[in-house]
Length: 205
Image (cartoon, rainbow, N blue to C red; front, side, top):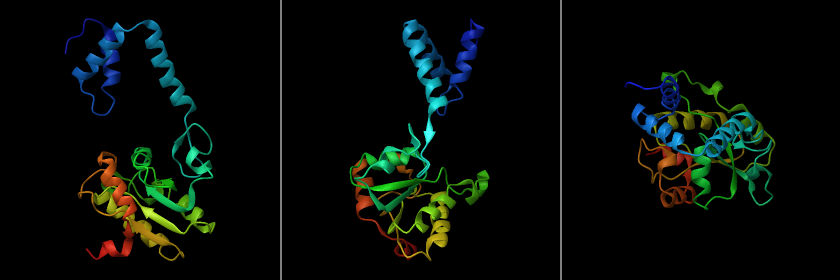
């Protein structure tokens, strides 16, 4: 693609670094920004800079937060005896949108994937074990995507947690194998949470 401006070319190049953004889409976004008032573009730029510089991760569950402890973990209305283990923040948002879950979360920060060089030590597993050792937890729900990486991660976590005196369950498989949790509709996801089953039962499939 030939550009009439080096500044335009550089801006398009930065946008193409975003997931799912090709060069034509990036050009359309950059040209759209050029059509906006300077104040609007400055506000956009400041919000991105502020996000990158000030965003935090909850020291309890590792979810993205504005504070040291996120609103879910600090809420007295949440059931701290139930922890829902998810891959990332997008899954927390998806489950929260169902309005079917009142417990707390634990964000692993990824899934075990040897092909991608991601092992258990790259995930927030140790802090999950520490939370369970505190003695308040009664159930851990594995709410990971129905993929090979998700199943591998659940199997590993089950081995690490099975000797604790807690219930280990997994969301019901109304979700097709290979499906990413964040793309599942709210009704199906909510039903999968409320009709969760003991993890051992899922092994018998």
